[in-house]
Image (tube, rainbow over all chains, first blue to last red; front, side):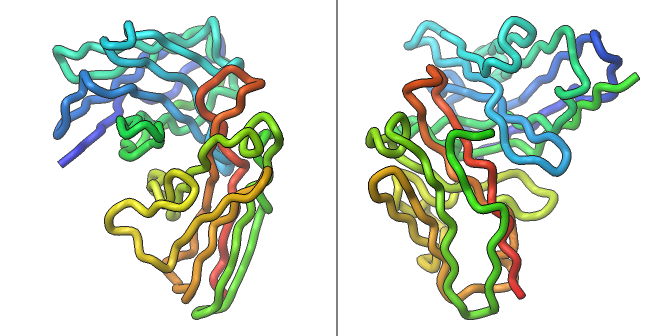
Length: 122
Length: 112
């Protein structure tokens, strides 16, 4: 059974940093692109960024709203995905989901974690 | 503002048919990029509902169907049930934004 479990959320002051983790199981993690998607309270889904797999040189892409502040990384030996968030702003307050990108070619999000809440407030 | 436009809300009575539109442009849906749909039940993570415009993942009832034409896509739900009350999001790719994922703003479906 595919499982994605996020952790590391919490309350942080504006300008602060936080590192989220996503533990994956039930599939060959190293084969898949992995993304972060966030959802501000009462708002819609916003794509945050992507890390591709080793075959694609672990390249990353980011939404304009987080580029230069957030860094996505992965450790295939630990089946884990990370999101390092620096220079946090109040508008970064959201539930952060990690999501598996399917490998069929459609690049949909076929599995999601339960999400972890990040609150940026003084 | 998302490049994919969805109506904020739709509603229907049990048993009825509803459709949710996802309107894009020549740089996304109109360029031939696939549209995918997700269902997000209250308090839960999104779930893949339709992929590649009209394909259902295993386990998704055939009451849900997707279509695409020109610069728009649609999600249709027939035989509406109370448990269909959720938020629905479309997703595609936009060549002008140089990012692999764009979402629609989401549509809240209310079952009357």
